[in-house]
Amino acid sequence: MQAILAAEHVTKIYAVHAKETTAVRDVSLDIREGEFVCLLGTSGCGKSTMLNLFAGFTQPTNGRVLLRGQPITKIEPRCGMVFQSYALFPWKTVRQNVEFGPKMQGLPAARQRELADRYIAMVKLSGFENHYPAELSGGMQQRVTLARSLAADPEVLLMDEPFAALDAMTRQVMQEELLAIQEASGKTVVFITHNIDEAILLSDRIVVMAANPGRVTAVIENPLNRPRDLVAQATPAYAALKSRIWDLVVGDVRGALAGRAGRA
Image (cartoon, rainbow, N blue to C red):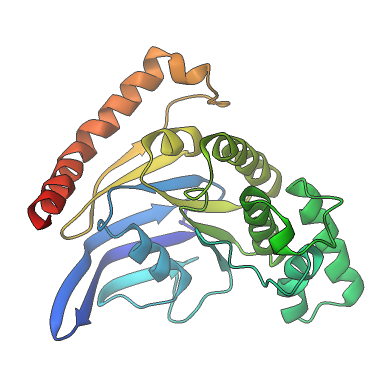
């Protein structure tokens, strides 16, 4: 089966002040339609670079990124990005924010409203349609961001650590709701995280990346059945998977800590 999203021997080099930095080197990866894939690794391993390449925000130095077999050569509206920051229009209400994508697509006003109602309900914000972002909690604002992305009807959701700023309890709820939304919508999701538990709870596959330069060190099929709730986290199978992933990333974690200590 052809991948919906793919990277073929991708290298990305940034030149800053005449100095070149290789963000990712020779990364190849296939994302299957309808699956939930987590890119996991420490800071500097190229996770966000890969997401920006998939979105078309930047182009590879070498290699290709593909959507349905065709090269991504510019910003790709079929790949919707959800950032860590909420990125909402503060002067627009919840409904107006969610209607933005359908409006830009030129859909009739009635269809815009229909889609907004559908996705506002899907993220459990019915009753807050006329509120402004400043009147909402952080978790609610991130739900609006997700609803706005879904209303634009992308084929792939690219999510850059969207729950990192939330408290632990809100984050747990958002993870569970994201899985329910993904199941209901059938969307393909590529999700960045540096949290092993989050990757295990959410993903069908975990792509483990290493730094300096960014590269893929392992692609792990998640063998655990859903739901992967707090009960599942207490099982030997969960602990074994977490230990396996930790063994892959611990060198980068220790290297990053040593680097910070050396600069202190």
